Length: 318
Image 1 (cartoon, helix red, strand yellow):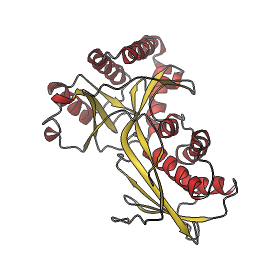
Image 2 (tube, helix red, strand yellow):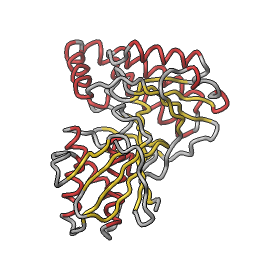
Image 3 (tube, helix red, strand yellow):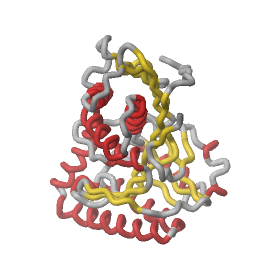
Image 4 (cartoon, one colour):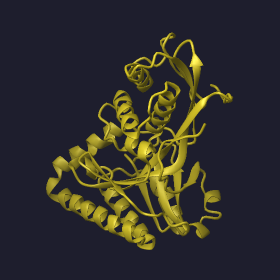
């Protein structure tokens, strides 16, 4: 692995944020609304001219080499091919470094793709419009995830808070209060998102009469959360996070370690705590008053990050 990556003075670099799901995961699969949020944990991509296209990750090592047969069929191959189709004949050596928890549901692959696309387009003299960047990233996500929702690449590109339903995204314009932060805890448990989603759908089909009430509650919960966000009611927003976690527990996507972390944080002044993403592992998110965060992370055995809202999405950094 490439533990040290030296960024040259002539490199072109961009960064893109990771994401969390504040409300509505799993229920969105049946056409109900959800709320996603870009957060201040980033993937950075830097590119320089080379004789072949390669991608080196600080965390994973060599992940793509067009001449060496590494990463064929990957999102990186899709990215290079689509940018070449736009008239770029240059080859690039790319470096990626990410502080986003990988394989956790924070959108690390989408953020890496978005940052890389943005940097490559600048390197090639192309206009890195957010619409084009997001569209290419979505194609790359298809290579990685098969049938992505589009939320990961959209948040990584545009930033902010998004209300989404049935593939339609609407930006939620709010100012995140400085006195509140989100704590993101990595359970370290990796799971296949598609498997968990299918099991929840199968449960719904078997117990439709019971679960229809749960799904209606999830829809109302997201609508109330949207109203609270718009009026800045963060004290009560945490209560809705706890209710959302209860609904996720009901559809069997929690796990013993998840519950252990959730209750530890609830006992230690969290306003609200829930899973984010597919569940059965991945990440736990907790809403805190900043003044109450001191010492909480020392109680955790797991990796954690303190994040806030990223409002800008992908950016040039050099």
